[in-house]
Image (cartoon, rainbow, N blue to C red; front, side, top):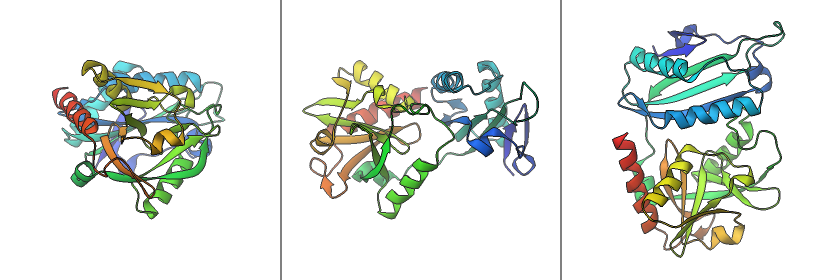
Length: 280
């Protein structure tokens, strides 16, 4: 049976118990990170922890765990589960409420076998839909990987019922934002565009990697406000997160993107990204 790290120790998953008054369970007061591991090395772990710690500070999530502690916990958990390649999830909540002035946070880390997206998604591209739900950049949770994730999962399920892989969100003032579980990029006339962080989007680790790869590979890239016409007028579209890396989009609803096949610039960035992951 799989083992998990919970509050300073590794235990069997069946023996891992969260307090019934945990603030994450009752109120969604928590943060999480989803990470990929290859050869027992987590891809861009420092970036994930930077985002976690920044989110904890911004949302007043109590955190007593430092970088070495979490790194050590991940190493021990991978060893305990005998995993070299894994999908890791780290969840940090404010812990039990109503138990004194200094409640102890809850830290849960799980590690499972890494399952990639189907190869045909990359070969043929995927379809996305647009959701009528709107993202509010002024929401205190915007830009943070909060455990208040129900709206995203509901919209993602709607997309899958419509035979789409992802759903794209716009802001309350009609700017392109992001997917339910991904960041979005457009390509137009050889230039890569992605929504600015001011749209309240998550500062994705894969998003950051693509921005760095574009600079290294002399690809022009701009972070800016984008509208529906930019989306539908794009020559190429792709999605990013640390599990999918770069996923080509060939259709938005019934609209065909470009020639209906993964674009050349997208394929070029996919190869660059795969190389970074393999050489970590």
